[in-house]
Image (cartoon, rainbow, N blue to C red; front, side):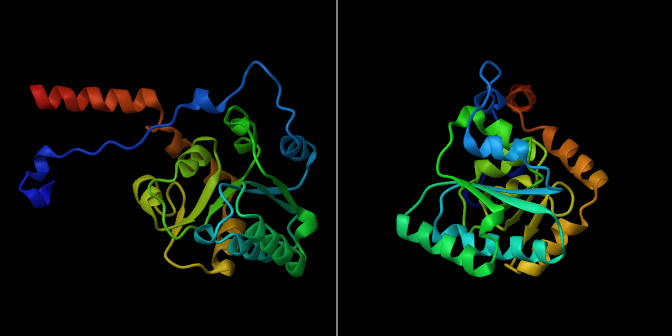
Length: 219
């Protein structure tokens, strides 16, 4: 818009909001296998990925990061929800086998959206090493429910994340760097990041922001 001659003072941006009710299910207990596995899991750290299994998401890199975390003798599990090309998924699981981590990975192909809050709430870290994203709603969902997000530079991360303030954005894929970041996040830092995320990204927050802008426009 600015390149078209519109003054920057007349341009306001409003981030995408999250409808938490769409992700929650208060009436029926979740009985999904992956949820049950997370509930029964007493590991000290739970890593999460939700999304398609495809090249641009670089799933093997997530495995590399997880392997580096395990090398530090951390009791951790990797939980993954996503579908994709069967041949690609087969290659990913073979990669896990070769990396020696398959027995510590729990995967489920699909899950109804209304149960996802149950999953996010139990995870500690959310990993999204993607080549590109238009927005990446999963980032906002994960952050909203208190996950510490690690991702690459993309449309969603540039809008949502201030590096080392409410998440981590990396310019390159270095598995050791990602693993060390995960291992060095303190419980206090997790609380601060979760607090910063929950401020301003609900639909009610977006609505209030829009009302303020409308007042500015017509005053």
